[in-house]
Length: 253
Image (cartoon, rainbow, N blue to C red; front, side, top):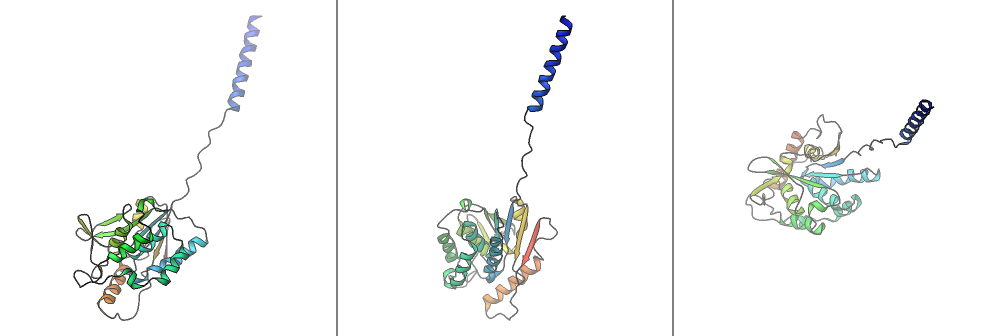
């Protein structure tokens, strides 16, 4: 009698174990991580607000932006957008901004423009907010004038970073930050796609405004320098993305 009882008990135990295994929760794989989208705003001397048109299109299509990277004038527009101004507000700013708001002329000494007004304007517009607490992570690209290396500002004083990134040689006096001296970021990276990749972007929307060059003959030293810089930007930045996957370039004409 004991043997049939033991067999029945073993069968019952096996059935219960199988039932419990069938009822146990299954491991569910985590959902895929959403792609991290970066908007890269390139250099382009006086046409920086051309970037606003692309930002308006992205907003109208509800494209999320997880990072903003800018070089030269792209850092100026990018800093304001990353801080929290929407594209339509930036368009209004572009229509009301006067040259005197940003340009502080000085006797030519390594540059015609000091850059202090630009720095103060940016800091006033972002209410002194440090870069690392902007609504969208922001990076401004500048060039170390001594080494020729790229410098990416992603923390600290926004006005200082934008001033360094916008310091076009011959127009702006080079920006001194700590023991380093910086000039326009477009010299080393007119459309800084690589910087966006290094900081984790999966998808890059690059805006290249160097294609919209002024075809007129410049009048005066500053216009000549600006147009020369635009030509250089266009030549060293053919399309911005090269052959990189997950990168699209919009060229403003």
